[in-house]
Length: 165
Image (cartoon, rainbow, N blue to C red; front, side, top):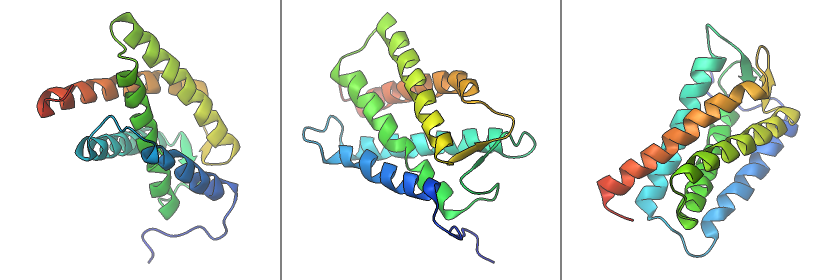
């Protein structure tokens, strides 16, 4: 029994994930990193974990609102798709730090990035990464509001815990 099967055939969703991984992880090769390697790893793990928990709650039994990749079974490319969340969280926090977003602008930033996230999710639906059953992309907006807020709280915790600016 293969616990993490590969797809029977590579279709547009697998190619989308592969190309998205290449494009999104290329941000780590940009000059002037704002975060240490340990903070980057914590951000990557946190974002992938939150994505996995969210999908488990919404796409797993008993709700079963959508499928990820080709089937409702967990497969190798499901893991690859979770790796996409890390660079988005990194970029999100990088811009948050770079522009020193504070106060009401934090709320506006969270809303704007949540809208962007819904738009990106819609693209993933077009490419078959997500197959919605009883779900629509607009339902994801409050989920992204929560997750992006939680990401900023986590980042603030890391700043205090690791004592960096």
